[in-house]
Length: 305
Image 1 (cartoon, rainbow, N blue to C red):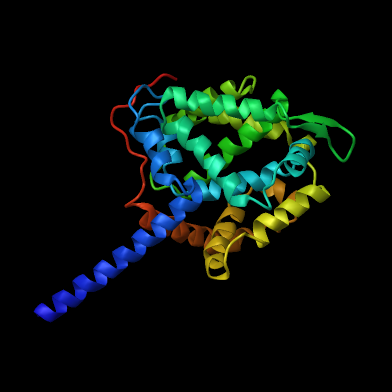
Image 2: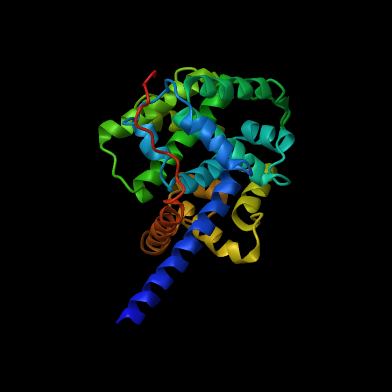
């Protein structure tokens, strides 16, 4: 009996060691090599925050479904030729994909959970960088990363994607009031980035998404980016199985109207009974891995939004 208990405890200890190792590896990839320092700067520094603990943005952005929402947003954003031209001509996403992921994660963490002055510092840095992202798309049209119209496209796709992913795979079900509250929370950040009249309800979000449909198209640049995102991840072979589970779950959340443009077939039965359950397993696995190291808890935030 004692031997059996000892064996059980030893197995449990090994499983916990594996979970801790995987969690630290993932955090290092997402947050960066100085993860502990950065988490301390965001989570442990006293001071008012833009959003209090009970705001929907904190519920959504602390959930593992954000990985699916993030990939969904990237795929859809490629469909606007001017936005995609800016990425293709000014981003080093193929040579430094982890750096891009870390910068995006840092933006989301800082504005959602960080002190107000740190959140504003991140916003100011982005606005400065955007000032240099100008050029001409392959169809001859000029673009600028500070164009309020393009900023709105990027914003509404991100909000729609994070909310959609949470709807399908989030740990906590949001009420309609919380769903509208999430859109409103994100509008506060969007306005600081230069988005004019960002949506503040889910219905307004859907309306703004629809308004962009006539501007979207498949281009050589978008197809190249989609191929890279879906089939050529910068990962060692053993890790690709997990990534392809992420891709499968993401595909199951894509709107039907986007499939022809993305050149991804719409298979409703397979997606409902195979891909979405796979996405559920993926997000539950991520929660299990990251639970011991997740820093997104705070009890003394002050709501400034």
